[in-house]
Amino acid sequence: MTAPLAAYESFLRTDAPRTRDQRAWSEDDGALPALFLSHGAPPLYEDAHWISQLFSWSVSLPKPRAVLIVSAHWESAPLALSSSAAATPLVYDFGGFHPRYYRFSYATPDASWLADQVTALLPDREPVHTTGRGLDHGAWVPLSVMYPDADVPVIQMSMPTHDPARLTDIGRRLRSLREQGVLVVGSGYGTHGLPFLTREMFVDNVVPGWSSEFDAWTAEALADADWDRLTRYAEAPGMPYAHPTVEHFTPMFVTLGASSGPSVPTTVIDDYSFGLSKRSFQIA
Image 1 (spheres, one colour):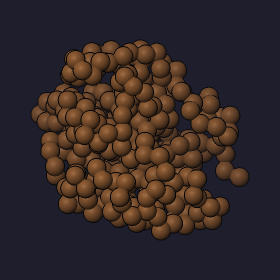
Image 2 (cartoon, one colour):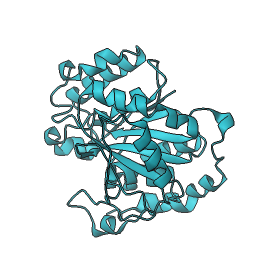
Image 3 (spheres, one colour):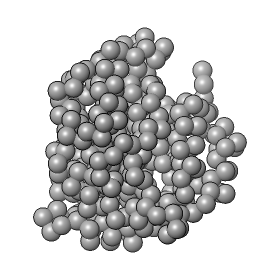
Image 4 (cartoon, helix red, strand yellow):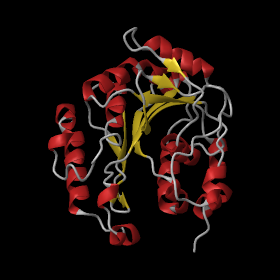
């Protein structure tokens, strides 16, 4: 049986040191893209292919000054921000995994300046509450692969709604952060029909029709830069199996709002894990 975090620990020894040579973002780079990523859970640390995909993506970009991330795993209204203090303890919002995963640490630097920026950018009707909450696994699992030295300040923002228009507007308010070297990330999952997965899908990565159909619909809408179609995700083929609850799809609207406007994104990851779509993209 593979030891927990075996692939990740191998990555830390072999590829991760490259991040120390990664060029830091500068004003000459202009705005960073906005990202939507399928974040994975602790099993990502045992998937060398997925680790390689995320890390290669991160080092293809300048290292950001900071990350603002919206995760499927923090649904809270009014809108709230995680603790900006350095080395805030993580949230282990999962169950049934090896004890090693509950001892994982990701001690990021102070991000109080970013929290102040985010608060200033949102309108009075969108009050921002600060909390002592740490990063949840929708944030720290992918970021610990993308920035393994934990040297980039991170703030997590809650999702106060699933309304596409409101989430897009929140992303639009945050757009100027990209021009300051902040990476704005929506962290969800391309498809997330966990209740409908069979043992065969888990073991052999067999992709069910509802997963591939919904993913193809998403890919087509993105390729057409058709944001309006994306807002009608409830009508898409494969629903409601692909997303029996929608919190893993709706972070995408923060990403789209934070972009410069409707355009075709660059898809970076488009394969499957456990039969679920890992679709992930960046958009200028």
